[in-house]
Amino acid sequence: MPDLEPGAGPTRRALRLLSLLQSRPTWSGPELAERLGVTTRSVRRDVERLRSMGYPVNAQQGTIGGYQLGAGRALPPLLLDDEEAVAVAVSLRLAAGGTVAGASEAALRALTKLDQVLPPRLRSEIAAILAATDMIDSPATEVDPDALLALAKCCRDRRRASFEYVAREGARTERRVEPVRLVATGRRWYLMAWDLEREDWRTFRLDRMTAVTESTWRFDFREHPDPVEYVGRSISSPYRFLARVHVRAPYDEVRARVLPAYGTVSPVDADRCLLEAGSGNLYALAFHLCWLGWDIDVLEPPELRTVLAELGDRMTRAGRSAQS
Image 1 (tube, one colour):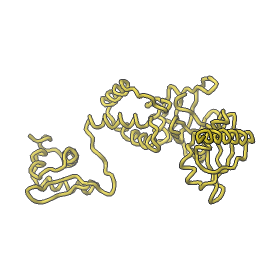
Image 2 (tube, one colour; image 1 turned 90 degrees about the horizontal axis):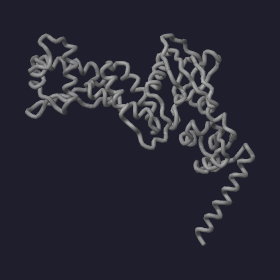
Image 3 (tube, helix red, strand yellow; image 1 turned 30 degrees about the horizontal axis):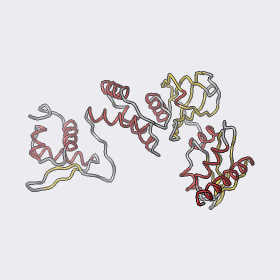
Image 4 (cartoon, rainbow, N blue to C red; image 1 turned 135 degrees about the horizontal axis):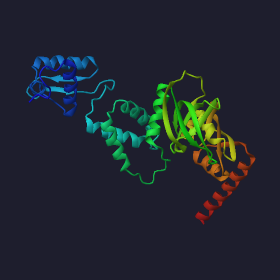
């Protein structure tokens, strides 16, 4: 029996043909013609239509030949059935809260695109699966996936957002912002946005937000600082100790190793860069600098030099005692 009713238009046939090609490696022309309720000549025309849209459909002659969806230079749009769409959406939501470098941001971008076209009946299935899912020993701070997705859409579409926010000292306020960028540090999600009441740029932790609401009000582009650098400086400035250190290594190498949550890096010359990092504990700062694995020159604070010297003496004694 054909999959489509008689008289289905070429667009519907092409979409159904694409779905069939994605469901198994190879189809013969007669098989596709039977499933689509058309002639093999119409199948060839529909194949050419898919090729014109960027889908690399390969054709091979002979008894073992047929049509096969191949790999092209660029990824064409994918056609997902209901079960596949639910699986992809759930996977993307879980990945958006992960800690793999780059995966969280990419998952969020893909989820934003997918969420735009999901029908309501599939949204409820996704919500039910997520509600029944727990993660074990995750080092990341959990955030509301719906809030994350709503803010991502506001950043993309330049629409205002509002939410309730709990500051570090516990004060609760209502904020109206123009979101610019979401930044993931590996442990937390931050939003860089223009605060309409305070008329200045601000950084907000998503795990401290509630009642996130998307507005229909669109805003004009506003010149802004680099989001990664701005968030990095914002989350390190409240610490008790702020260290400024010259690292004897190229900027690109140090920048790749230092997450925004731990400090900001700026070039000095070809062989050195400036690392600025904050912490509530000098020993934590010292351990982090040792972990980097490069020679350093401490600019400030002077107390950090004392802690590093103390740790160096302690490690030297430990090494000698292990040899005795």
